[in-house]
Image (tube, rainbow, N blue to C red):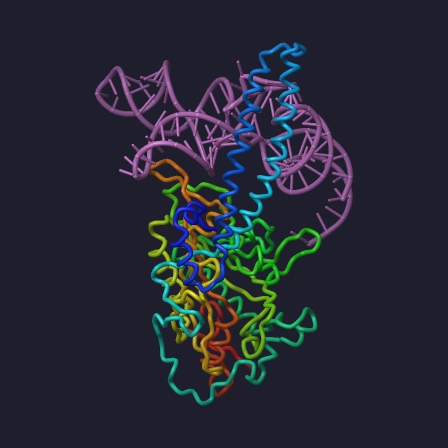
Length: 423
RNA sequence: GGAGAGAUGGCUGAGUGGUCGAAAGCGGUGGUUUGCUAAACCAUUGUAGGGGUUUAAAUCCCUACCGGGGGUUCGAAUCCCCCUCUCUCCGCCA
């Protein structure tokens, strides 16, 4: 959510910023609702003031006296009018809130212009992704792949995109989770094990609701949402709270399975481990002072990158252009690993600064040491990392002629062996 | 799942229809005293929104907020209904 004062006082600035995201927004409509809301508010407040004054006067009058009775009669009309106006105000408030929720976050000045994913800027390139590997094949074509990553059984038991991980497959998943959590903890992120279902208020605070409910699995009885990422419960940890300024930045990480309906996905994007309905991810989250959030974003990206480096995977860093930036982000880097068999980049992490967009929805504030007043903080999050595509890249890049996959040195202590075997 | 009890400001806790944004205590902040600390004493002490004034801040005025939502009433922290959460007991269960 944006600051209502900002759109009121600098509508042109907001309009220009939203244009950078190439989104259609009826800002004038929002401003019109805001104007009528303020007019109605003043009316209602005047009526309430009248009631309050009468109330004080009546308190000192004898209950049954003629003056008292006259006052009651007089105030009945005021009361009815106030009730009517308040109902009207309430409807306007609801409209205003909906309108505000429909406004996207504004991109940072450093976000490049652009409309499509092709316009994203390659910020950095690491490792030798371009060396020829004539024998590399897509991971799902590796003989024996189904033994370790059983999509058929998963489809039978649940549905497409819910694989079983078996034997070394399951072991690799466990090793990666453990590795990521250990590394992130060393980097200063406190480990959290979050709830896997959240309520509507939480999903609204992080921006999944309204509009994106189709992307989440929802329970029928209790109206809980299966989390699409640990970002949702983690960010909401401090919802409606005021944190001491000296505690900032707060850094936390969480492993969780993630559940996504992925309505509308198709083609090569969804083959094998590329896109699943349930997958494992370790998420990094920071709650920071507004003045430091862009430095913290660089730090977050570095923390995420270090994991890829330790896994010895070639990767690149993309700086997302305005048009490819999400609804809620101010600035975002995507980290993509090279998958030698598919000969394509796979996104394994997305590091974003939300500025106060989520914090305003969630009312997460800190008490300023200078002013003593609560102020909205900034939230950032990034993956550290999402597992399936990391696994895909490891399988495709490290497969040797004996159908063995070399486990990166840093991961060996967690996996327990130097090779994963399909035989 | 069943029965009961609760939810009040940073915390504890009073308040069962009207000058209650809310007693008291604790904590916080400022001050007096003090060689320093402590103690004592005095003062002060929430959040949000709107409006006036201002270059801005400060300040001033108004309104709302006693778990959330609705209702009764001229008037609700207080009465009624629904919901959420916490606690106790019973049942069930990893």
